Image 1 (cartoon, helix red, strand yellow):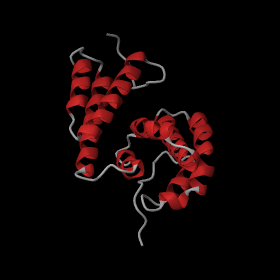
Image 2 (cartoon, rainbow, N blue to C red):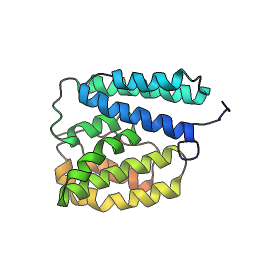
Image 3 (cartoon, rainbow, N blue to C red):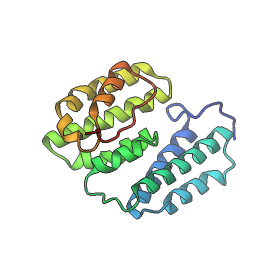
Length: 182
């Protein structure tokens, strides 16, 4: 297997396959509240003796997934806006996007537009992680109006102002999505 110097799912097929497979396993793990599906996916790639950067990505993702499940605990999963910030706060932006996508596809009207904006915000941070500021700006800008418009829907889950500020400035340090302090 050829060496790669950084994990880049946009330009490297192995990286893309690993990212996508782990993310799919993570969605199953969220439903099951157990990491078995993720470990199965990770094992498949790790048994192929991947380059160190891929191994590091897998290890980092496994630790982050474990953190999300620990944070989730017995938390009911009735509203995707209860779960998405937990995923986001572990810097799992691609997984945040993937988690929200089925809810977005099933939604209508204002809820659909809001979920699309959050998917775009996560996408902006996926691009920022890769150093692609122009794509991050393009996607992040599309998210701003809906996040602003539906801020009251978001407030019980997290304070949207910090997210809005960070997206506007393209701050590469993502905000933590936490409920507002009353």
